[in-house]
Amino acid sequence: MITKIFDIDQNNIDEDILKEAASLIKNGELVAFPTETVYGLGADGLNPEATKKIYQAKGRPSDNPLILHISNKTMLYNLSDNVNYEAKKLMELCWPGPLTMILKKSSVVPDTVSAGLDTVAIRMPKDKIALKLIELSNTPIAAPSANISGRPSPTRASDVLADMSGRIPMILDGGEADIGIESTVIDLSENIPTILRPGYYTYEYIRTILDNVKLDDALIDDKSIPKSPGQKYKHYAPKAKVEVYVGDKAYEKLLERASEYKNQGLKVGILAFEESIEKFNEYYNLSLGSKKDLTVMSHVLFTNLRKMDANAVDIIIAEGVEDINLGKSIMNRMKKSASGNVYYL
Ligand code: TXA
Ligand code: MG
Image 1 (tube, rainbow, N blue to C red):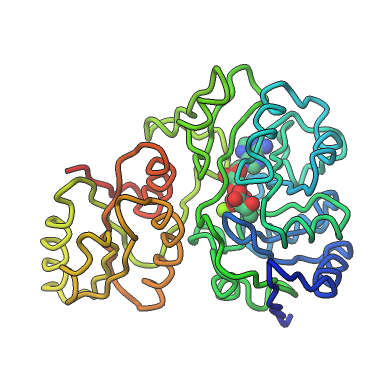
Image 2 (cartoon, rainbow, N blue to C red):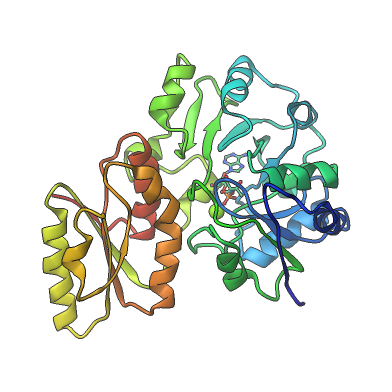
């Protein structure tokens, strides 16, 4: 299969291209599209055969459910019969945007989407191209991140192409995803609202909206089994091994480790903050932006991990951040990409 890529300008959307994409979706095919978080791999969310193709294209385990993306709030009421008070409150403040809500599913949601669970994940993205595509497709679009399972999520169309070339018919290129890490996932199907995956909307922020909200146990200790099936798999992993160091003097440890690895004959890649990056000139290095503005780090993290692979480094040594606010969401990804090799100094 040849994978076609089409450029689309957010501010001047060419509807003819989106109509072609929508007709692929309606015909049960896959289309990768931009969202404000990461690129999604979309299929008609009410068509079981189409959603099966997502699992095949990604190599995704069949027990890992998909998010349904909607373009207006009324679509939600078709997908869940139990839109509770918390859901209404959250969607008022966070939609359209990077928040995914887990609710009891209605009978229209295929088992291939919910992976056999009695709940469904729903999100109304903010990206104008995504919203228009859903609207023209006239169906909720099921979409996981458009990467091969286990790889870093794609934040650029070129990242999608690297993983999906020949596997899907179309990629819509809307430029770099703004946020760069996936949506916050919150489970509202049980008594206490529970954050299963932190994202741009942080635990601290959601607590200002809901009286009672907790973090999934697996986000607090490493031994608990995550409630979100997808969170238990190896994730966000570049080909190189990753080590992360956190603390004011982390860059000193990075320098020490980098020289040890270099002496072993390995090609070292460094991910460091703007404040310390110049110390790493002798290595392949990429900046994470300033420690003072973590939105840059979230924007570049996955892209930088992919650039490290493209430069064939053997080991990636990275500076991490404290586990609070957006830092918690970023470290959730870094811990997985480093298979737990995170050290607090
Ligand atoms: O920002 C995002 O959320 C992106 C864009 C494309 O919207 N999508 C995304 O999808 O990250 P995915 O499939 O890569 O991650 C969805 C996560 C997985 O960890 C999955 O297990 C979890 O949500 N999930 C989906 N349905 C669920 C359910 N019914 N119960 C618990 N977890 C669920
Ligand atoms: Mg994913």
